[in-house]
Each structure stands twice: as C-alpha cells, then as structure tokens.
Length: 171
Image (tube, rainbow, N blue to C red; front, side, top):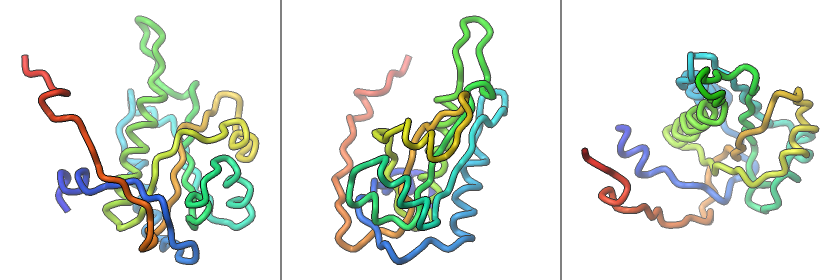
C-alpha cells in the first residue's frame, strides 16, 4: 500500500472482535513503527505500553466508558517523560507532545497497514491510568488506542476533511 492510499483509507474503528487477538509478530511490527518515529534531538522520550492480559485490561478499561472500547483484545497506551524530552533553549518549549503525536501517528498507520483497527483516544481518565501503570511524576499518558480486528458491524463514519485550498498556503 502506498503512503497516500494508507493515509486516505485509515479510519477510526469503533467495534472489535473480542476473541481474536492480534498475532504477536504483527504487534511487534506495529510497536517498531512507533519506535522508529522521529523525535526532537532523537531523544525518544516515549514508552509504549501494550496491555493484553485479562486482569490489566479489566482494570484499565474503566478509563474510557465506551462499550466498543471494552471489546478490543489489546489496548496500547503511549506515555512520555517530560524530563526526557528536548526543551528549546530560547523559550523553554518542551517537545514531548509533538514527539508523542508523531509516534502515535506512526503506530496507528502501521496498525492500519497490518489490517489492525485503532481509534486514537485522548478523552480518557489520566489519573486512573497513571495509577494503574505506576508512572513516575515526570511521566504522562499521552494517548491510548484499542488494537484489534474490526468487527463486521463496527461503527464507521465518513472521513470529512476541509478542502486542500482551505488548509494550504503557497507563498
């Protein structure tokens, strides 16, 4: 699949086959795509937490109250350490969110290329996840996504985007 087709066809999946886990080698390729993402000064301030065990899944699934979220056989949690990220000397801007967004994008695109569904979620309970994962004070949960194969009746929404002329300037 060429990049443009991959990006154009990716959709958020809201419905998973609960009893069909993603093969381990597929999960490793997805995680490797995140690992290969660029980051400011190549500091790679991230950690990818893949939750697949039934006990931990039941614990963390309470962080986002949607039935379809609870169907996925895996949940991927992207975390980062603010102290490990690059800081711009001129004004103190920290690159953590940018670095983690790039890594998350690599992860969801790699999953789509593998035929694995995702749904980038930011509306989770960060305090609950922080405690469940035992994060250090400098570590933050950035985003989460279920990982799994889309159920035949998964909710889909048409992809709508602004026209290119509205979001682009040629100077």
